[in-house]
Image 1 (spheres, rainbow, N blue to C red):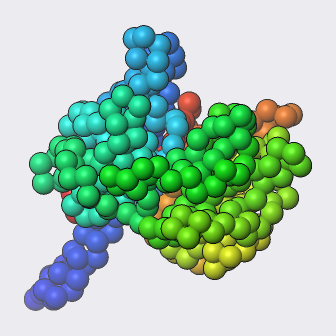
Image 2: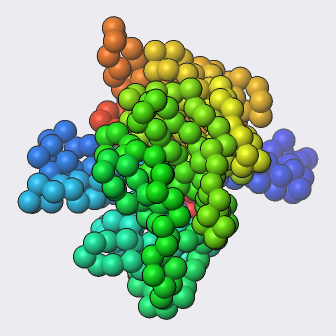
Length: 372
């Protein structure tokens, strides 16, 4: 007589495979948080929140990096700029920093500008008054940053241009290789407030967009310039007073180009590089989108165009992958905003869950650990 537990072999294998697939749903959220006991050095901790089946299983502090040098000058400021996780082990800043947090190693502490990256390398551009102008490349193969010696190397659709100050105004200058400087425009607007650099976006090697302001009537425009033909025109005027401007940048998504003012206080979409209009919602990737709203209002979050909730949050402190999103949850007390931990939504759970965390600088991204 057969035992009741003697199931056919194929059913046993099927059950085991189902159990294994469920157990393999492992991932990690990398967060950067200020160390409250080391404020003099502005120390930042790189922390991993590890999950299995949408539940935290452990919290790991990988390493710490100082934001200030012993001299008091800025060192590695992970609270400035954008961060992302590269190859599941490197923390990379668009300001030039590269940190191998798995091996507790700072690969680059030099300030530069991220140009592009792919599966085997990351390219940066340095424009330093003492070091000069040059490109450098981080190679995955050896885990090192190398200066590129070839002066003809051109990794992106950009040209060597600068905005030079002249009696409170700016002039746009072009520096062709091994040729004298060319002044493209003597009227590139007035100097932006709060020591801001002028945001630029290159359409190709000769055409660019930049944010221009006119001090005489206190308004902002987006200017399109061809540096070869020396043709320029304002493609749109922004309903935003220059005196309120704190920061601005162009940001390209898979679908569109945006101009973002004051950390998403106002967002303009650039249409066909010829006009612009204000938007109330911005895509975060192909699946997620979020409302543009002031800090005093909750922001609706969408997954595949369906609303999945609304949260008080700073859009700059949101990170996402195809089926997960995390944000720094905030709470309004009067006119003040305070952090209230980290909130996560996943497609598998189809709900939000919040866990404690404080002094959060940035959420750098997710790591898939299912194969570990």
